[in-house]
Length: 113
Length: 394
Image 1 (spheres, rainbow over the protein chains, first blue to last red):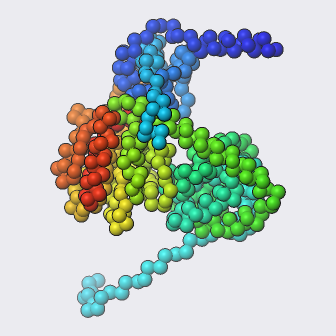
Image 2: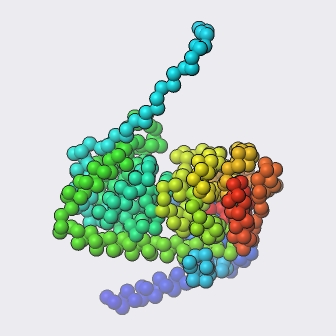
Image 3: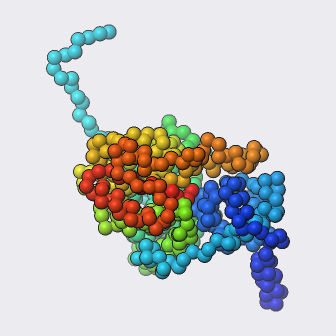
């Protein structure tokens, strides 16, 4: 039983780490992130807040990301292919992945004290 | 009919405040029984503490039960750095809602709830039969619903809990308390980790704004005179709310334009106590009655206003965007009438025009702390001051 589980786990990890099918343009992704209103709940850096989840710098795995954007739950509005094509989602995804990791709390005196 | 005014001054009746009603004793005894027997109880606090004694009573109840307290965002009900502050851990099996609007439905405060959880409501809202759907929601989601004032009921509930806790329960309760204290520590660490995201961003993150502000005021006798909901609750997560006057809470409704006048009023009340009043002011709200800044200046009301200037009526913007998507009206049309750009408002200039010391707009996060420090110095001289910070949306 253990062996199939290990195989399954590897399959999930492999899928999770899959890059987008299309190469993304992070700069264009930022433009779309603002133009299409994503920043309104997720903030300009995609770091999230009370109104929206943290997306950057580690968004959902690509396929899950696309599925969620097309048919979200809760208050998030759906973004259909008419609004954002798969290529544009790939650009947006590239933008989110390009955001810098946050500094360590221990390196922020205002938080570490 | 016209009548001549009497020669003597008209009689002004004495103001006698009515004593608030406490809960029915049998229902309170049953509530105590459920709470004492619970494996993982949680207390949700809405507008409970009307007086400082309300905080003392809630602390006593929480410590007796070793139950976590979600202090809510409505006022200071419970010290934010008490080890039992927060949602605790695991799914609650008994939930005590104290003055929680909407009957403290399953989603209140984000804490998990067991499928078969019992709910106890104690709320004066149930006394107002004129209340509308916003107060009651569709029905009270409760196993015990006590129509009474929570603070007035707490002494009876505390005594009942004391009477019912046997020696055999005390040890288990202490173990639970240790677990909850650990959950509280973890939640604080998680808040600091979350605050680090977007730390150096411009516009400035609200976590950064709150942390910079806290660094400048934490050694003073401060009072937050604006609602935290528009700033993602960051002060509540990073600051130490340890006294009843640390926070005035929100307006209890969804209207705009309340924030700035309420802040000036609260600052006036704080003035005679020598407290440093802090107003994190949203830009859209200030547009309704900016003249209150002149009022604060004219009457020498010490008030530090730090703008959360996201250049939009942002709550509206999110909602309109959602509707635009849903009805295929065009994804970029949600901004019409809800963004405050072209031109962006220079709130420092507005404030200066009304006689108030002001700096900004600030877009570099490194400049926020020094600007706030300068403004605090002005406020300590007994005057209002404003720092315009261009901020992330939420």
